[in-house]
Length: 386
Ligand SMILES: NC(=O)C1=CN([C@@H]2O[C@H](COP(=O)(O)OP(=O)(O)OC[C@H]3O[C@@H](n4cnc5c(N)ncnc54)[C@H](O)[C@@H]3O)[C@@H](O)[C@H]2O)C=CC1
Ligand SMILES: N[C@@H](CC=O)C(=O)O
Image (tube, rainbow, N blue to C red; front, side, top):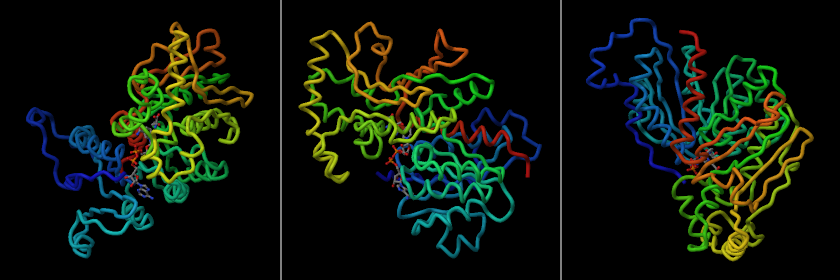
């Protein structure tokens, strides 16, 4: 899905208009930190992020951070803005779309004046994830909700980490449970000397919402379509339904803890029947009714037993990792979750008897965008004035 990009973002290069009350604020006289930002993947999450960044620009400028939103790249087209009249002239003016080229895009955002630059990947693309190491090595910071680098080939992830010797930073909080502070919480536990023993919980906003809403009154496929329209699902909802998306999150958390887990090590129960799995993404969206019979049986069986369906996952230090649809008694703590609630339960050496819980909405463009934005701000905090 490619959402329409609000080109008003290009006006970031103009003086932002201040809200009326801001006129009373003292003008910032100290030198501003400047951060050039390029966004790849203006879909549901990317568009929500552009809105949030644009809204925050005046506030951030008053706090000493000038965000230069200078480019958006989609899969086939990209838009570049520039302070450079020659470049603008050559392409018929800023705010013009032209064929996407990630080399050109990264070079444009990086500039040649030694400024701080950051690329945000809001795609779900392998091709984009494969560029991170190169960008980081060039000193460009990278922030992403895309799970493919964190859960994919281990050598590629090692190359990404190694490329950070340039001083550029790689942050990916939104890859696990969207805007919830999960990766940072785990990092803080480990950095302060705690030891991770196990993680369990509900890691899919889509499956949480589907389990919460599925009571047999509507076909399961209709609910999946609604979750897709609300922006909760992956671009291909089969990634959620097959358990792959949650398996990726487990791998990211395990690797954060220094455990060498890969996707093949995760035992996954898929809800996608083989005939649906074999279809193209477009065909699959047309044939979601193939899910209905089995899911009607699951919910009927849970109701007969006075239980609820919940999509749960777990991971431990021995490398046992699993993702499954469970029938839980109504008294189980996970049974009380609502809507897109994710629950992450960290059992650590310090939190051994009473595990630490992080809980809240775990999918949707706005909360995900906010998680990405928070990563951007953490990087911005550490920037020197140039
Ligand atoms: N929707 C959610 O609640 C959450 C999503 N995420 C992740 O955020 C990312 C984006 O998700 P959505 O916005 O929901 O998907 P989306 O399908 O709405 O947007 C993806 C965008 O990336 C673009 N794209 C694809 N390949 C590209 C390429 N090679 N170069 C440039 N652009 C490319 C697509 O055209 C599309 O505009 C995914 O990686 C997803 O896993 C993470 C946490 C929560
Ligand atoms: N599709 C995912 C989005 C967040 O990662 C989910 O439903 O959890």
